Image (cartoon, rainbow, N blue to C red; front, side, top):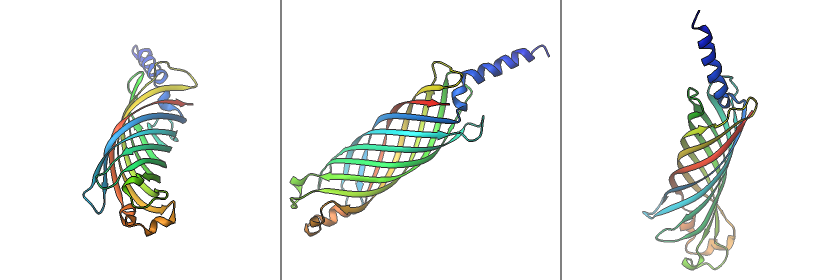
Length: 216
């Protein structure tokens, strides 16, 4: 019984300084950069890539005091990439994701976490017209789906009773699969590069993201 006040003190200390892990609803925003390789299905061509990423996530923790949350995300990527046979002068990905996040709420101020997410969306790619015989619009639209895994750490420098604010740094690894959807200009169907631009692609990438998370 003599140790009971000490145990209660430790419990409330952990509860207070880890209050951000008990947020029912959280919103986070992050920016990052990735490097990877783009592979083409019918050729051995491979392109090294760099992308700038922006994401906004909504996390819901439906089970109080259980460190597991459901996430919905809006994602944007801007790609810079080149290949041996043709060049994509720009690529813009817009998509949505659904995932699960789990974390370890045992350390004051600092929370390690992991996330698995499934994504789907669209890639709008602009090809370098100087490498094509077609002189019109070289925009090609692809649909994509992807799997993503993240490991990160959140830091909450100040514990607030109602609003939980933390910054986070995470490592991300993802695999994207692109499937041809349509040409912006149907006249490109007559060009000899039509089949090349319609082929499926795979993109493997990894990188770092930095962000801010606010929960209630």
